[in-house]
Length: 207
Image (tube, rainbow, N blue to C red):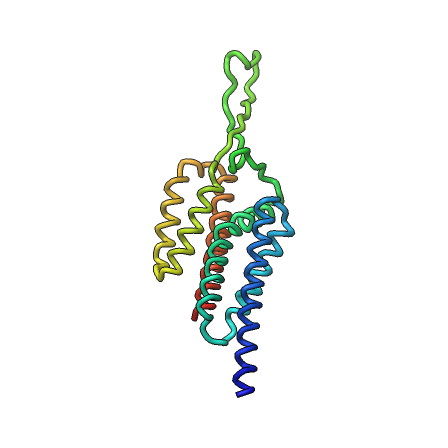
């Protein structure tokens, strides 16, 4: 009887620890989202990794209350934390060389021929116009991660292909520049990986 009680206590403490680590990752992700600081994004990713390791331990299925709370926290983490994770991946990949735009996109230059009003006699050097591409990336990323995590948890991972296809088609006209293609690929992969990791966390905790 004592052995059984001790085992129950250990399992209870295990689920409390898993919930605390998951909530810590969520809180750090919110701070990274609000403040835009790399250390919070890195710490959130580390806490998510720790939660995945804990969830992978074979200690049985989570109690209903813990399963529901961890599931909701992981879903919120997928939606909120994926943004800072994608930004962090882009910053590390581009070494902060890609300028951000005011609407969530990036600023790219487009060469244009000098006009009659601005070109001087004998001037053949084209001017460079700067415009913002991939606008609305924040909103699209939130919806993307919500769809991906929800599809995996619903047992329909094939929907990932549909999500990526819709996003690619919608962004096709903006992918002419190398900066836009690079940001699209890196950001999409980072966002998808984050959402998948959060969904896997729920699956492991409930298995």
